[in-house]
Length: 213
Image (tube, rainbow, N blue to C red; front, side):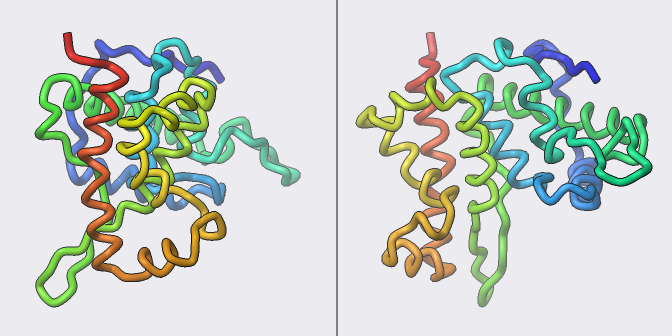
């Protein structure tokens, strides 16, 4: 199947809460274990937009199917051309919602960066709201993997490294973390504190990589 290239002039109407929940539900019911939830998808799309490699240069087929775990053919006897979707209609619906959400994020980062809000998990503890950005950061780092060579200098850049630090920590595999880091992230309040550093890091990255005129 052919996929569209990213078009920054496409519809950027934000998805409603119902549309976001519906998209999350559709992704969650796909047979692929690699399909993203809505938080990981939001982080992934954000990384593609902030990336040093302009998204219009990347074919849609290289990054869009990553959201639903790739277009891997079903190994069963009744292989479907729509796999992992049940129909072409469902595939189109998911794809259009993903593209609209992508354009909504792009619009916010470009025109209203201080009003931009990533989709993080929120839990309540004794009337205190605790933020968990781990899934979001896993998605962001998946986006980084789409242009590893372009991102590499920014992990060495003094300010880029500082901005990426909380994202890379939360988006890393547990076995790659130090014992101190694992202990820190096991504490919901410390996880909350690190998660709250992520949005500022993203905005700093965007300004470093794509400075305002």
